[in-house]
Image 1: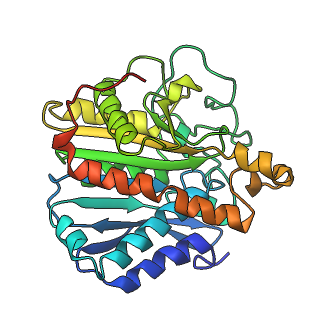
Image 2: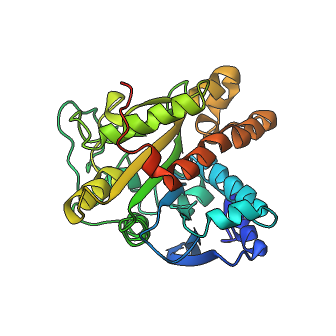
Length: 327
């Protein structure tokens, strides 16, 4: 497959036509596979000052869950279009940053596989060991790369995982506040926003801030569709990249001055199968809406959340530390 021939990559390249002065595109890494190359691309919108509030958007970690990449690229297209005419938004981006890797696992997206070319599940690849009750295989293993949820070689980061980690550290860690949203699909009947931990049911050290953000979302959009909870309320896994990044940030930065809050949007794809049972027999249908009208609705459905996270990140002084409601 030619590197330009899959939809998500071409749609991302099309964003460069906007030529917005504060939008910077960067090729972070090149993945070689079967004599072809697959770039991992990033976009940075906003000033170079890495201390100002930053929102990070990530998708395509699991190649079959390509709807996440499509949502992010669609949002970026909308944002860059608005920047051609919306002066208020242009002024907002003078003291705010948005950074994104829409396709973390380009070979997986191009080839319709969950794993990367080495058959590694990137979201099981970090040196994080789960505690408590785990699920065989699903929680991650090193038995064989022919089995799903393979973690890879112990102590070795895959290129894609290392690229994501280095990018987040470089572009987000030094910010006074940074929120990351990683978009996935393939679990449950309801759209969920998960916060750490994936590794255990220990209380997340930044739960107060999560609760404050949830409280803000509930008050701002009382009819929103999201269930907000810890990932470990659903299942526990080894090797979660966001657990690893959160712990790295905890160890390296003053927690009174820097907030790094990683979130996962898990789209309730079982609902798509419930409405269209034939999707169950399609490899991509387990993770992606196949009906055109349903796909269009998903593209619209999450714009509110992404816009909310932009504004909440930029205006963090007005909600961080506020008394939250309980989850």
